[in-house]
Amino acid sequence: MIEKIKLFGERNSGTRYTIGLLERHFEGNVCEGGDKSGWKHGLPFVKDGDDSSRMLYIFVIRDVNPWIKSMIHNPYHFWYKNMDDFLFGNMRLKLHEYPDSNIEEEDGNIFDIRYKKIKAYKKFYNEVENCIIVNLDTVQKYPKEFLEMISINYGMKMNVFQNLNKHTKTGKVDVKNRLYSLQLKDYTCKINHDLECFVNSLKSRFYFKCV
Image (cartoon, rainbow, N blue to C red; front, side):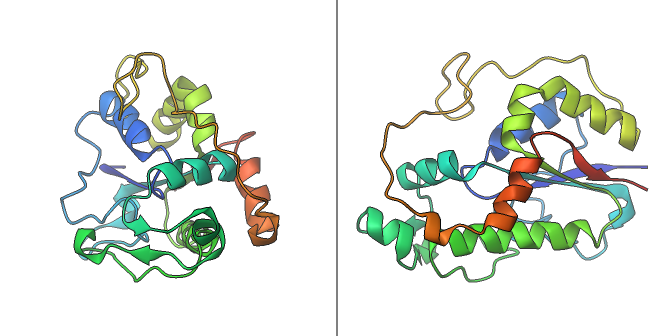
């Protein structure tokens, strides 16, 4: 029986929206960010003393192009000089802002950081009993189906469906994502095509496992 849901995802990947959905529909079952269960943007791990068979781990990944644009405009713990520096240089962390749990030093270009996380999600998926990897686009287009999939497959009681109708950061009504008109330089050379094909495949199915 699932007792708690823990969500992980990279910055600007829709973690706040997805957690909002989960909290609204599985009230009391979602781990809080400050409860030592791990920083949602960090690498996944099983907290000492937790029974992973009673945890549902969810990973949300965003398509690379909108994610890159959002990261440039909202870099959080990273800083950079210009677009070339952001896309092709090594990222630098504002360490004084870094949380203090499940942290490994992040270095390399922004794509190295993205793919390290996706690889970690896939590895963790194979190590625990109950896990979902989902594309943000799928969650936003089919929120009811996403929640019902969790309820049916993991035996969790779901509240009556009610979507989030405000952007979780700006508060704008009926706005899912902030749109940026930024023209990016060609970053094809940095793409891991196998991993991006996997991310794209998540739009056509729910990638989940349960015991």
